[in-house]
Length: 97
Image (cartoon, rainbow, N blue to C red; front, side):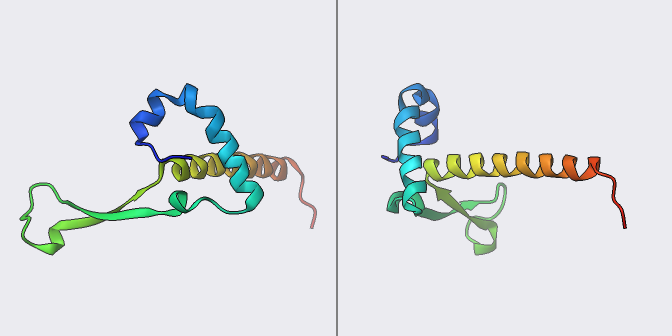
């Protein structure tokens, strides 16, 4: 899938949804994301109100592909729901030692 800024993705999600799902399913079938989905751009941003000439007043951030962010969020949410259901199931059972 092509790389789009997050605000573009949000605005046009109704049009991008189906191709995104197809692309994501293909990635799961292959067991690997595309090259652009695996890339991140590391850049520096300044700490507000600090001297910009000193390196310690900057911090690195990784700009990750929007596709990868969406897939990561979906997986994390599903895992959270699974673990919560598992925890409730375990809590509901009496423990015998």
